[in-house]
Length: 291
Image 1 (cartoon, one colour):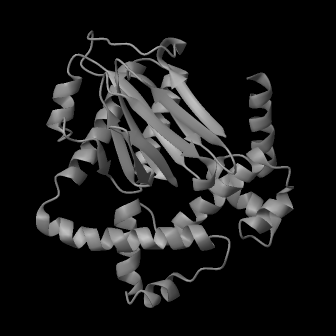
Image 2: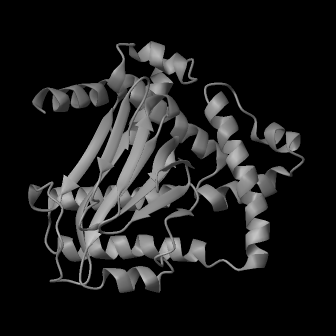
């Protein structure tokens, strides 16, 4: 399991605070793999708000006693006092970002951005922009630089604006975008199943009776990146999981995720993550040994 989280004042206790309009209390990411399982159950909920973003894989949420599978590209909003129960299974490869927040104007701000009390699970699309905002919030809360609380609130409101745009698309746009999104989601499924093989974007588009240009443009609108960039992100993400959870050497991992040349794989990995695969593995193990 990979966990990266940050807490205001290093406290994991939920809190309600009306001293500012919007306050980020904590945020983080969970990524599971293999046979891992993680269950969260809060019978009385929390006193703050929470948004969870399923960036990849899928998760199981329980609403009013009924199980609902929430796939990648969706967010879940919990309000204060709501029962919270959800389960992550490593076999479903979930990667989930989350943020807890409070403040004197929280409810009004949510309603301003179309997240009314009737909204619980909503489609936002799979986007590196969403994930990037969560990662920036995590980093800000960990570093606590000058005016970090104001910056955190600004980043969270930026996320709300992106959600609002998705929720308020008109009917005509929704029909067209629904088709584009369906094709993008089918492609995402295909890429996850074949990411370690050679994939021709042109051939894939032709197999779906689409022009290559239309497919690339539609896919980028849905995810924020091109198909080849997405395939690269899947390869690197799976390489991370293998580096964290297995004893495979770099050459073996390179082959597993689709690179015949381990030196080329190492260069690509370092370009994407800022560390070589070996350096990344050492850092993760060093962190775990101190936890």
